[in-house]
Image 1: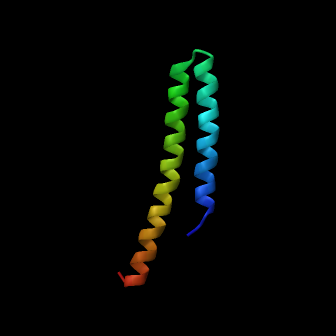
Image 2: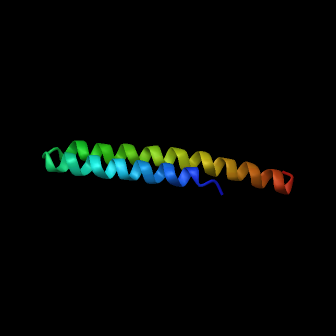
Length: 64
């Protein structure tokens, strides 16, 4: 398993958490929500790419 994806997810999570805290403290909760959603979308796109690679690998292993 490639550990780079785990570090990327952790980095995005830390950055999003800090930005959300800063925006919430500055009374900009709607922007904090948008930052959180953007972080979630970034992580989901990277995970979907990895799942596609997993299915390609399984397809090649089983010969389909």
